[in-house]
Length: 314
Image 1 (cartoon, rainbow, N blue to C red):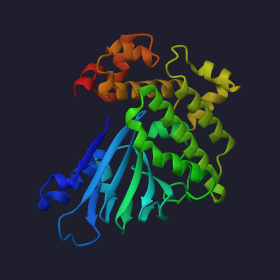
Image 2: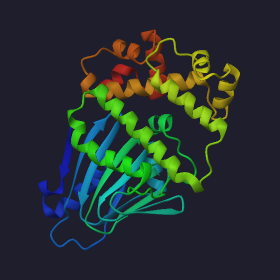
Image 3: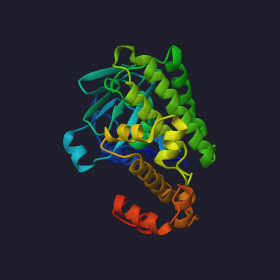
Image 4: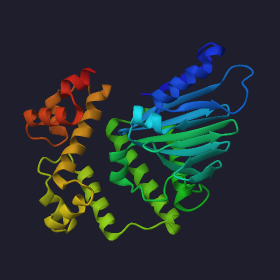
């Protein structure tokens, strides 16, 4: 379902305030700062689509900057990873002591859990991909040096990813949920390849990190299998169960708890999605791999602070 907002729908005196509210509702809590004195209001618009648990949006606007401060992170601790692709005009994304200068076709990644500044000094258009962190890391490692590093959209895998992401917003509305999920996975995996190609000067993934990423990907791809277990994951990847536990122990986790958490997160997304409103809580529990609805309800409340029915109603 397409969600669209435009400042043209409100009084000129309220347009900037309205746009701040739109930005926070569509992406994450951010403040908006105009980069030129508005003489006739503030013109900006955004349209957004769901894409398999992610959100892809197109933003067209007058020059302005947005920033996320430590205070905002503490008050609204959203946990998403964003991809910004410049379509028209320049954009500068600053995070972790780096600045990515984007020209049309270029893109970069930034993390909502850390302060950032995005400045667009020209009239611009951006495609923005918002990805929940657990979904992002299941497909795409967020290595040190990745954030606020520009990836050129004029050659190599960066060009392939840039062309794909630019086309996604125009076609996402007509996709069936399962197809949208498959497209979303393809987008993230192509992004992972583009970032890896870019990272020649960045510390590559260690073998242990690569194995952990393989395990997470396998788990994410097989969440709906009720027989998914640490031993099944280890066997599928050619690892020992002991080594698999060691991989997750380094992340202060266990394979079993990571499986359960991903199932609960997927269930939460389905419960919040109007397209699944006709499905029972038990059906959703079984879809994400739980064998017992009572166990699912208890585990869901422990993770999200409210039971699955209450979560859906809220």
